Image (cartoon, rainbow over the protein chains, first blue to last red):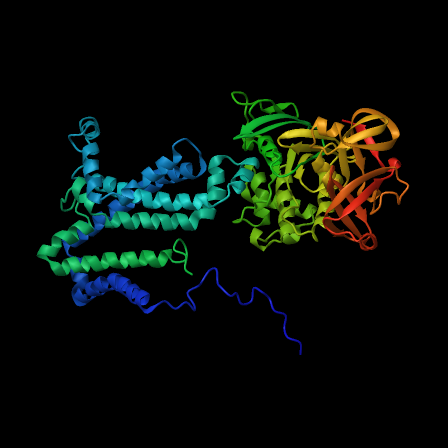
Length: 280
Length: 360
């Protein structure tokens, strides 16, 4: 029997892309990695151990908790819709239209991601508070007051959630060649039809992932909300605010609501697996 | 419809300046090296990029008259585009791809799909109807892309390197298929290619672009029999020099050489008298090589150095350097007898009767 032909590619001496298999780190790297993992795991386990599972339903259905949860759900969904309506065109413009100062606008849009949420709240107060020019005009002319109102909660959540959507969706558009769009336009399709029939179907998975990220961020928003919209039970007291307040008076209720928000987060993560968060 | 285009636009340092005249129902091939502006030219014709100045007129309708003037959006032009790599719509099957343009004209989805399916039938592509682009081979993708462009019954068809993404084994069959389709559709066509065989087999006329300028245009016969640029000469595999002729004497130099270099250049004898500035062309097979000066009876001898040897079928192509760059085609036996290797010195001889000249 003649030996099988030997391909150079069969067993590379060094692997340019080491996969998870076969690489064995020094013991201290391994130890530190375990510490990092524990950092995430231990508090969550602590939370789960703290929950009084038998009374969970009862605690969540207390009128205070229900009100906060309902408000959270409504405002975060509203904020997500606003994010999509204005964030989608923004992502499209950033990805497809070249204009002077584009890279500046691109980083500027990211600002709320790194800005301390409480600073975002202060900034929103300065812009839309009753005593500001815009806020004053809104109140005097339209009778709309954003501070201490559910609308204010939506404004705060939109502010902090927008970049999560824009960044993810813009990246998806940027990663695509515009050739199919050009061909579609040459075939007589106007820009709306090109977007709905060609662009959107191709980037839909990332779109939904980006929406989920923005919604999760809006749902968990705390700092900007409490600073700008205040903490009015039934009007601006969202679930995170409620948890913070209940912690002093009713720790069990706070834990119960926390575990619910945790479950939602886990649900989003599971939903995103293999879409935006590519599994290896 | 007849296309008349004066394209003049800039992108950074690049300046494209090309006039194009495509008679109704004919195919013009635009050839030229990479970066010569071929794709930019197509983009302006399709309306993906704007013309700087000058007019693009298709069948009497002005599509673009330069910045500040008329400009029709791509959807308002009836132009079929087959881009490099084909850009099929991944989320639709072949019928959906072809139906897309039909639907744009206002036909309802169901009717458009039926028309598209019939259209694929007439192209003999019915077995691809239900397949998604990811399931198609390169050649099949090309067929669907061409069918998609022709389905809108375009006034002008633009093909950008339609064979570059395909493996060479599939090309001859697809080339003759495309040739048949173009003949049947009788659509005015502009084809961008870097492969001379595409141009020769598919086009009626050839435009040669180099550095954003048209260096030659004419019927395929005119361009191939009298190449006027190093690019076309190398595509055709022929030797092209420039020279100054006086009767049966011509002083030659490389195409890139300056006038003074040319004046000190090599003198060749030609059989047909000529005068003034000329191109000098001869086939590599007309070049004989020898190691000593007086072996052959040819009167034209040039001392050269072997740059490079390359096997081409049963012949060996010898690239020669020195005062002028030439290529010669000899048998492997001759290579062995002459002991040719990179760097060796040889005399290249060209018979006067094998040299053709034509005015620059």
